[in-house]
Image 1: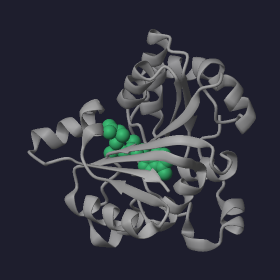
Image 2 (image 1 turned 180 degrees about the vertical axis):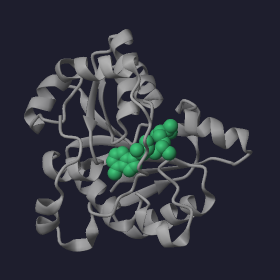
Image 3 (image 1 turned 120 degrees about the vertical axis):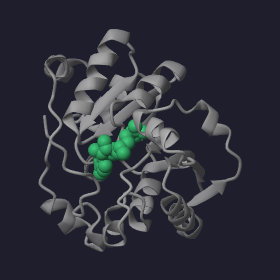
Length: 234
Ligand SMILES: C[S@@+](CC[C@H](N)C(=O)[O-])C[C@H]1O[C@@H](n2cnc3c(N)ncnc32)[C@H](O)[C@@H]1O
């Protein structure tokens, strides 16, 4: 299983922007529990799509549209949407192994046929594996906030990454972002309006469908409002 990929080849191919070299996630020492490790060990056969080519992944998806959940944390949203949207194949991408273990454990119990998992940096996997115009949608819930100004370059949602996401999405595909950090929401909205590849949708209909994740629970506890941004690929 590829966990920490060498980014040098990609950087050569994509000179613009430090697209995949700037770390967007926090280094966490969370322990993988015994049940998560068991699930990780069993995952290769059942859920792991990281080593697949795109056509192998489509074969696994069995005709379903592919939707990405980037930075799924402990996987609540992946499980929720896989159950709610049986006609879609939900690929969760996450760097944090205990979270991947938790998702694999819970997915194993539910026996859902439409989940794939990638351990690694979503930008790298998108660049290396996903063809242009291949995705039906992308979800990005509560990306790491990086609140200090000097760390804003680590925020996942930046112009170059939005361009990368747009290039991998089919026309009319959706991008759903949720964050409890108001200046992040504001900046993301600006980036989306300026990108030319995304059309922002007004209204919050998708908000109601979104499950409350562990990170949203913290926002609710601390009385931080949550901002949902929905855009479609032009
Ligand atoms: C604040 S958590 C939110 C988790 C989940 N979406 C939720 O709502 O509970 C952000 C997650 O994004 C992951 N992440 C950050 N950058 C990433 C990247 N480039 N590729 C994949 N995962 C990433 C982090 O490891 C972290 O688990």
